[in-house]
Image (cartoon, rainbow, N blue to C red; front, top):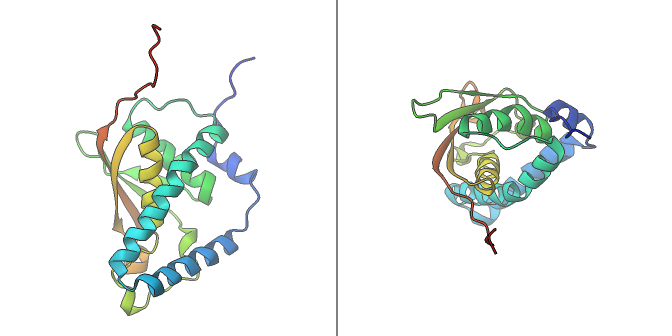
Length: 185
């Protein structure tokens, strides 16, 4: 039997039961509680990134299992897979990859929509908050599990008055895979 063909993000998203509004409101409650508990906006940004990282290191397994994608050959293909399949699969949104540097180690992922920000308005006291910083952590954590050490930062955020949601993903280093055993023994 031939291997299963890779599934599109649309097909996977359609087959999963979800309540997007409940997720959006729950995420909002988490951010609000972090703001109350930590008080410093920069600490909340760090905590959201760390939460996302912890999710990302687990989410990659589900992504690989459900999407049937084969190993990506390089960082460019990996970024496209995140944008076209990953964001569609888990959030139901389409993203585009653009603004590649000459080395092919840095790009932008631009979200066409962002369900995390439905019903959200940031008060003046939260101007330094990257409300969706959990997404940067998810990407960083997932990529680390496939041997890519990255830095992920927000470039544009519509909650801050920009015209789009744009994440910059920078490949810091490709970590060689290590096997715990030797094949010759």
